[in-house]
Structure formats: structure tokens, C-alpha cells
Image 1 (cartoon, rainbow, N blue to C red):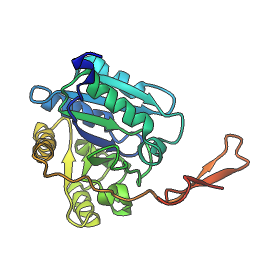
Image 2: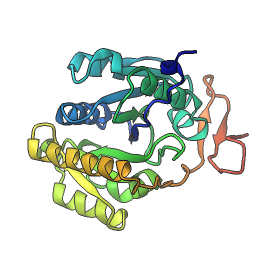
Image 3: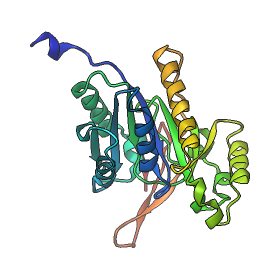
Image 4: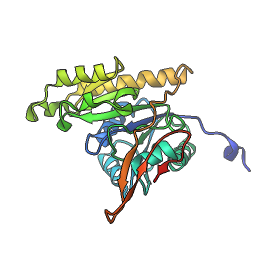
Length: 249
């Protein structure tokens, strides 16, 4: 084996991006790539159940070299691949780090999920959770581990608030209360200062990670929830208890 092939690639900061369908996870990643690509070497892993739609969107946006954007097709509930068994994503991240060594940041986008989706700390070093104002001004008050304990909560598309009768300041205040003071940012791609604030948060996170001062935190597992079978005649209760099997029937 050559010396090059036995060299361990540099470990990038791994940042997870979760949130419900349509809140703007991919556009959040695009915003970060545009803002930070001149400072950091960035790679992206997207998750979809059956497609590579999010990866194709990011490639079409031209935010990174196309080869640094890769898709994982999970074939199962989105949270399974970011929480219960992270093997597919972990291998994808490690392959990306090896192929484009050195990378500074790898962004891992979850498939669209519910309000409690969280990444396992064995997969990512930190995670942000994305809501949007079109989901309703009260959504931040609904809580759950994703909203309450992700490292950062992004309230996205704030430019749309007037069109959906949402008071942005009230929503941000509710979010801050639900998170007991943890970081919350209102963001719109049409308001550059908000994207700058998001980029500054990631920049500081990377500084702390590089200095050895960042410790990944576990937001806690998702709440149990029911999955119906395709025929609608049955299903199973999906639990996320750490000491128990992933599925209870």
C-alpha cells in the first residue's frame, strides 16, 4: 500500500440539518455554501427515501463543485438513517472526507421529517433544526427534541411572514422560550444580513471545533410514533429508546 492510501483524512466538522418537509433545509445549505465556500472546503450529504432530488437541487444551484455533493437514498423513515442506524450516512461522510481530503465542513441533510427529528451524536458534531413561517406562527411552541435541543433553531423564510399572517418577532420569542434561551435565528435568503448571521454561527462553531472546545450534545431520541403499512391494514409503533430495539409491534 502507498503512503497516500494509508493516510487518515482530516476529520471535518460534521453539521446536521433537520426539519419537516418544505421548511427549506436544502436552501439553508445552499445559503451556507454560498456564504462560506471561499473560506472553507465544504462537502454535502443529502438524504431522501427514494430519490436524489435534494442533491440534484444543490448541484443545479452551483454552490459547490458537483462531485462534493452526494446523495444517500435511505429506503426507510428519514430519522432511521440519522438516528437509529447511521451506518449509511457515516460511510458516505467518511468517503467524502477521504476523496476530497482535506474538507473543513460536511453538511448532512436529513430527509424531511417531523418536529422531533434528531441526529445521533455519533454521526454529527452539531445540528440545526429548520422551521419556516409558512408552517404557522405557533409551530415553535410545539417543542420536542428537534426544536428544543438542537444546537441552533432556524426560523426560515421570514420574508413570507406578512403573506401568511405570522408575527416573526413573536415566533422568534416563542422559539427562544421553548428552547430555554438556546440559539434561534430568523433567516431569509432575500435578507443578506440574516444569512450572514447564520454563516457567522457556523464560522464560530468551526473555530470551537478546530480548537478542541466543542463537545457534541445529544438532543435526545424522537418520541414514539406509528407507521402504517402500505395497505393501510396495520403498521408498527416506531420507538427510539436507546436500550430497546428500534421497532416495537
